[in-house]
Length: 123
Image (cartoon, rainbow, N blue to C red):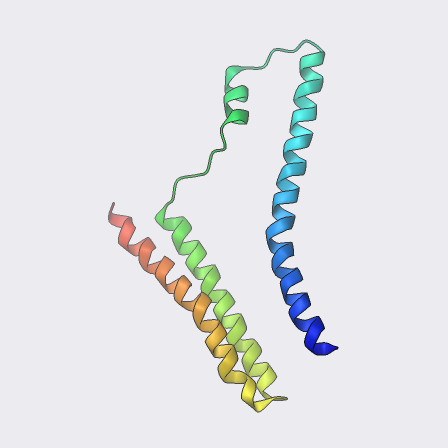
């Protein structure tokens, strides 16, 4: 039973990480549209800036600071996986090396983002 629940819980966690933010953003947009609809029905004029802000999905431009923050977060995830492997090692001695292997993926992503932030600072 445990062999089925652990992978299922892991996949559910990944799905929740992807689905929940999208759902919350959808709810926020829906409430904003209801508010705008109510104001239009009452006869209020919408400034052109509001209409333009609603129609464009603006993503902030990439910056070295953002890359540095993301890199530090990814390194934190890697350290967390390594610490988990160290903690589990007390019960299961063979658990450390696989967890260090898992920690290597976010660790290298974090290092790449930090390097990218230093490279793009001069530009």
